Image (cartoon, rainbow over all chains, first blue to last red; front, side, top):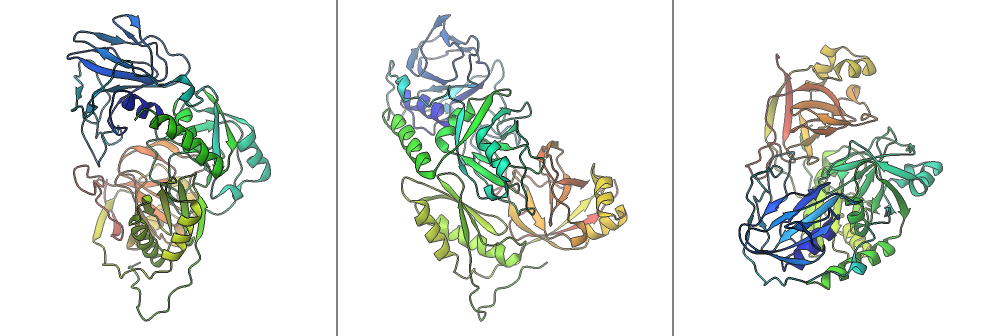
Amino acid sequence: MDRFAHSAANLLVGNDVSAASLECTLFGPTLTVDSPCVIAITGADFEPRVNGIAVPMWTALALGEGDELGFGRRHELARAYIAVAGGIAGDRWLGSMSTNLMVGRGGMHGRQLQAGDTIATGEQWRPAVPGRELDASLLPHYGDRTLHAIPGPHIGRLAAPSREALFGSAFIVGIDSNRMGYRLDGATLDARGEELLSFGVVAGVVQLPSGGRPILLMADHQTAGGYPAIATVASASMPVAAQMAPGDELRFAETSIETALAMRASQRAALDSMS
Amino acid sequence: MPPRRSDPARPRPRVRVRVEPLGESAVLAELGTRLDTALNTRAIALAAALKKRRDVRQALAAHSSVTVQFNPEQVTHETIAAAIRRLATRRPPVEEPGRLHRIPVVYDGADLEMVCAQLQISPARLVELHCRPIYRAFLVGFVPGWAYLGPVPDELVLPRRAVPRTQVPAGAVAIAGQQTGIYPLASPGGWHLIGRTSVRLFLPDSDPPSLFRVGDRVKFFAAQA
């Protein structure tokens, strides 16, 4: 979900950004180290600790055999990422190691990790450097729950008050949200016009079903949909969106393509500084 | 509706393409707004041509549109839009006729009663209408194994649900607008459920992992529960 945190964790341990990492939602696991490795923990702060002693996030850490990695409580963000030098070895399906729970494929046999599982790592292709860190000033503005969004192909279907509400009012991530999409509670938006034929959609698209409750498409989004696409969240704001949990409040700020490209470039530069 | 063959002697159709941004790194190129085999084959050809560009990461042909994801570090929106307009004037190749699938359906969907009431037809009439055409698979997508089939007879056209369901059972047969389809997996869905089938559409160990492919033809028939 949070591509920035996932990529940063991988780069900190010398992996390619496409290596598999562990995504931990709302709480972290307890992991025992079978053989020495270098890891990095990024994203949400779940109070990571090694053998009970707090360890820094966004930093490459060397762990020895028998060390125990544990976590405490969650603060405000929703997802932490654990990368291991060499990458995590999982099942590949359709060219991806991501776990797809809907179809039960990819990752650890297409399912969530369970107590007792052993996680294997791949071959290291570059030596990992313990102590390597990412400066906090280079992180996305996770605390600012404003998602920059570019008006979508069907923004013209919104009546003026609804357009104002989309870009001016707060929405709450609904309880019925998941990795496919967030259903947003708040102002009911009013769209006019005929039914659309389905079209290909991308992560970040804000769909508007006729009931007026928008849906923000996330990482596991469907490939096509037929509800009006009223806005698309800038890719640089998607890590911020990915760190939200049901009940969190967000706002959309209307943004130009130029601004979205500039945000994207600076986020990219932060990651490039590590590779 | 069988696929319409493009006749080489026919003049090139006038092409009007609407290109709109889907964020800073994708565009939606709409060739038209009708459910039409000729538009669909043009969208498929346009997507295939765009995929050959190095700055294009993904091009997905839908019914009458193409969603293009590109690398904005390599190309601007304006350049992509110009390329789309240029490539869209090409005549699509003649399409091979797709395979014909006959799919048994038990017409006992959760929305059957509501759909019949809204359309003011009997359940028997709904079954007759839904089973009448040979549908075309316009797009395989949404979730793995799903195919958008159509067009359905005008008497069956209903808007999508105002609020999509968070969970639709696997095998549910549904209609919405001019289209019909089968939910291959338990998934969210905004279409009206009229029946169910036992045919498996999602084939995880096949490549592609779907029974239906774009251009395939599908005919439904009523089966006993």
